[in-house]
Image 1 (cartoon, rainbow, N blue to C red):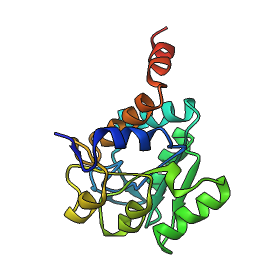
Image 2: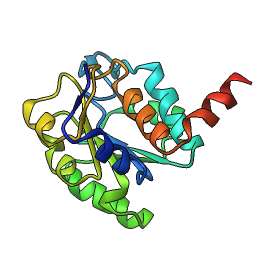
Image 3: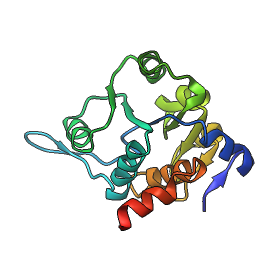
Image 4: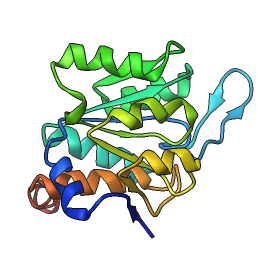
Length: 180
């Protein structure tokens, strides 16, 4: 069951301000598993998460991924989904997000960020909407405004995407566009 760490009305107000949806990759878009073999690694991504991010872009909300490690599999999936921003960096996620904010002219209040582990805590602390997955570390859950019912890699991103689209009144148009 999903957990709200702030009143639902306050979360809804924060969701209406989101213009950039950011998330970690491993543990959020995936179940944290990495299959290593020759010549590259393999990751499993949830198809509904991918469609959700495409729907965000369709609704005029930019999407980005921020990872603390480089991965060819992540790059391939980001290209396939036409993700607006992909940051794979070892310099720290707060620095990476601040660079994105400078590029877009947005503020911390206008971003939603999903992260699940210690490398995500700084961004979770600053994001207008901080969310995490059911199987995140306790510290990530404590900093998040919303904790999904789904674990990482199992549709948790889509759960938050739907909240954003519904809070902004864009959900019905998206559904109508796909059911015509």
